[in-house]
Image (cartoon, rainbow, N blue to C red; front, top):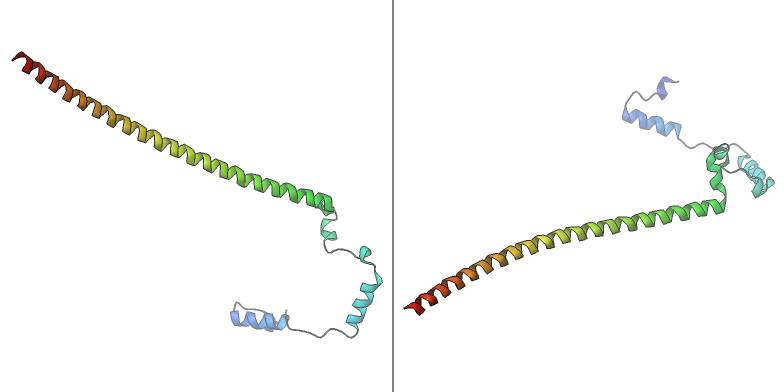
Length: 138
């Protein structure tokens, strides 16, 4: 490789090198005519796809059939929708369980407060009934 074309870890030199390598060049004479002639000579169905060499010996070739492709896409979309729905159901259930726990705690607190109020009312009634009994004895 030419010493003038090595980057030498210099960013400015790298920019110059990229500009030099990627510069625009004129196409050879008759290039466009040869391409157009070759394109018009082969029918559309006989033209090789850019993907065909990649899929030649692969199991992905199975997905080149439109029905299989659409069926696969439909199955994937359905799976995604069901997954999102399941996630929302689980989140809603978790929120319901948390609300239930808060309600149970509130009911326990309210029950203990009612027990306390009941015992105080019973104490007051007991004191008043003792006073009445004492007054009746006198």
